[in-house]
Image (cartoon, rainbow, N blue to C red; front, side, top):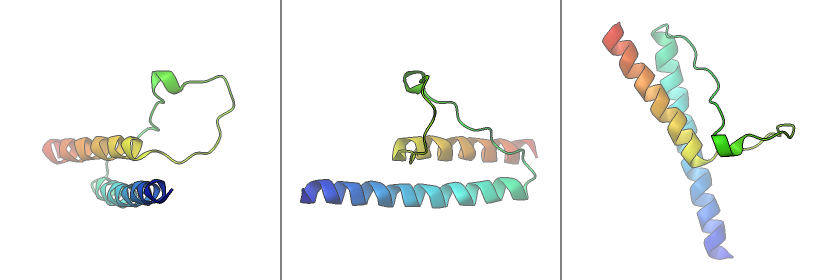
Length: 80
């Protein structure tokens, strides 16, 4: 039980750090006048016929979003 709680706390902390990084990258992109990112497409295995429900993105999903923003920011710097 304690290990699970520590793991959950670690996951939550990682998500908080990733969200802060994403916010900073989005701010930098908006300062450059870059177009907003489209909503990420769900992975092939995640598609469902059910009505979507609110959920927290995983740390892996947030990391992928951060990486995409980093790519776009680098592209904006090279192109601009």
